[in-house]
Length: 492
Ligand code: ADP
Image (cartoon, rainbow, N blue to C red):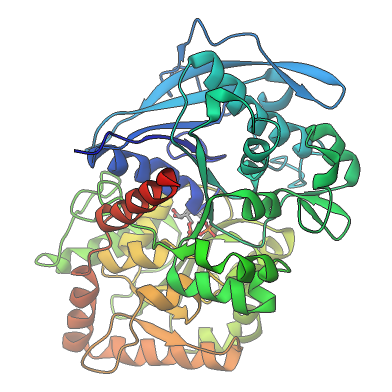
């Protein structure tokens, strides 16, 4: 038996403690599955003000206090509280990095009211990245792998290869960097680079600089021992498409042999209509007729009239450009003519809030909106909708379309990234959803029309639902791919 690997899983979002999107789902689920296959994994995230001490069951860690971390000209103190991730799998230890100056506020990246980035996000995440090393040293736990996720952890591989290069404590430590979204890079002016205490020569094109700025994501891509992203298709797109590679495709091309795609899984303890504790009417493929009770309940909650044969199209999304709302905007009136209802849950950019508020006013019997973040409602929409709409411009993996499959909620998606990898186009006899290829509202409308048309054929529709419900995207096989990758990196 190989000796167990020690892995620190570093993330800025971990469900159920802090979440804005799919990164949190992954960080809350994958470590538990890794643990169940023998990896000694622990998770670390910042302790944001929104994380309630009692609800998160935080415990003091007596030895992990007053740990000094340099940021700019000052030294700040980190302390650590701990809790666990516990579901059906094994218990995973979670460390919360505390510093009231940086993290005692409710937002993760943006101010909840103004929706603007916090002005000191550079210092907040420099602090988080650097404190990981100092905390590990104080703990006396040197992981074989630090698994970093997205820009908020991007400086860690750079620190390991420079500031901590000759530190015997980290002699065996390697890094894996997972890209959950290339579009968010964590870019800051040169002055922020100086606050990081990385060696001056790193502020260069083959280092952490891009277009004259410090780029956290680039730091991760240049210095990590291995890079992954969350679907195979996206792994290819970020290397080959200028738009999707978001300016960093050259580095990815250069690092091609170290880059792989590992599809996200689903935590079916959370996202399965047979087990879902948010639902009054649980169902599975055999009792799929009960789904309509969830539809009734959802429509009532959204103050929309219930008409059994009118299809309900659900959307659960960050309201960001990435998600294709400009396409929906262009054809909203045409969609409404199809005699459908829409339920939209989301929060994000103001212009999309305005768009959906206006739409709901114009079509009060057809469009219901909740422009907020609400996990319970997300579950009710998965269960109560007939179709799920995700016309993304690009999509690293996407989770809601995979959740939708299990809920018998047929996805309508654009064939990009993980959406393309997880949904098969309905041909009349096989497939799991409706796909369109070009980023065009005409094509989107056609896909919705195909969906509405298919919905009218009740028997065929039920078969389509059941085909999706039978798909299995559980974490196990992807977790084994990560384990394999960890081993190959740790051996180097
Ligand atoms: P992304 O990571 O780009 O936001 P994903 O589809 O990978 O997209 O993951 C989104 C996750 O966030 C899903 O679990 C989804 O249910 C959740 N989510 C997004 N917006 C909301 C919201 N307004 N309320 C509740 N959950 C949300």
